[in-house]
Length: 256
Image (cartoon, helix red, strand yellow):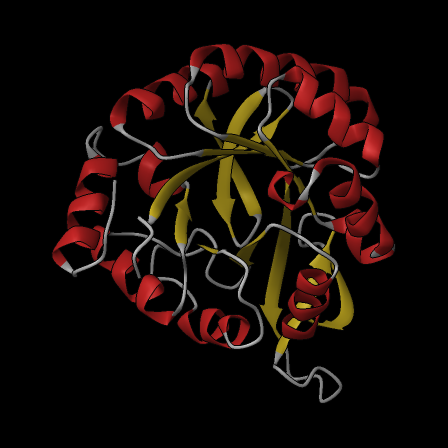
């Protein structure tokens, strides 16, 4: 691996506040998104991901306002997702200061929207956000099912095959989040990372389960090009980004 591994804090935002839970439930307040973004920018984060976890119509105006305020405070790439459904939504996010848009539920419902967005703006602006969970359903060959609506609805779609299809449609990168590992602080789902890495060459961001600096290098070994986390940064020591980067560097991987 010659490209530096990216370390990305994630801001899950609900009604203008950063929240964090376990397995997408029992959310607790983690602070002001603009203030946290400023802190992570100063602490050496390589990028920021901002996800509106409810994305209700009533809150969208608030979200654009917070995105604009955040973009004014940080000088690293900002990816924004939650409620992205159309080319126009991406256009508005980019005009609000986002560098990339993240799409999840709308792409599952209508995969063609990936083609429409990337043909308009280029692959580099679009991240496929994928919330996957383990399943015993024999129809899901990989054992990982795509979920939508913030992990609340199963789809019966094979997550690995969905990553393959989305890559073929031109998505620029994949944010692969394990619902089972989310917020547990027990480490990333390495098997899922390996399974997706085997079917796509687009940059892969591992998410879900990080609880200590030593959890990050195995995710990179499994095939991740970037690592994303929330709890460990929101509730850990202020120098946690530096600690994570040190662990990655000590494991022999390039990091900024």
